[in-house]
Length: 201
Picture 1 (tube, helix red, strand yellow):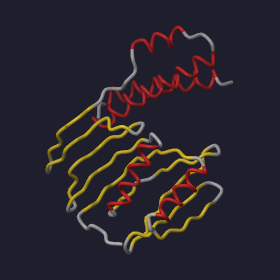
Picture 2 (spheres, one colour):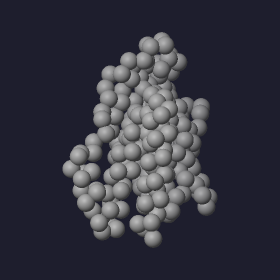
Picture 3 (tube, rainbow, N blue to C red):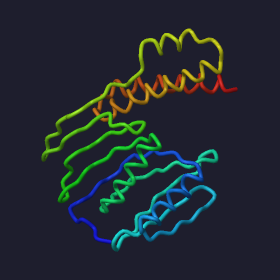
Picture 4 (cartoon, rainbow, N blue to C red):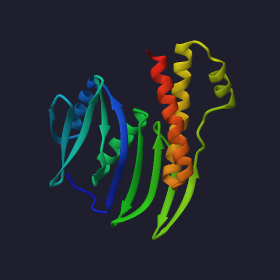
């Protein structure tokens, strides 16, 4: 299978979640696409090794509470395979930082949360230019409902919404290096984690 030498995409901080059946479907899809691959499974992880040119790309899925989480950083030089990974990110509403590379230079960086690009940065030498940035989508109404909600299961549902919002805030702060916001956000998340544990007791 020909590999486009100048086409490289790096997927960092991937967080995609699957169940076992979905992983089996992914393997089937790759075989249908003509890839040579093998897989092995242990108590803690499922690894799918895909041959691309002379290299092996090992996709790692960690077992978490009976489901699987795809983790790790991957450099993909096969265009068809990179399109397939992007479809995975989108379909599983996953998180990732995607770096598009041409001739060993990073040209674009995309921050993806819940399968959507929330930030797009163009890189030219040392310069970074933000092309697009999306604000976290939690409305005032959502927040009002959260504070009105008294029943534990309702509150737990709303808490997940608040945690998603806070994670988006933290992500933005980390990307921009805003140390005060990072610390404040981590503290809020700690409090939320405690509340979630109490609610789910």
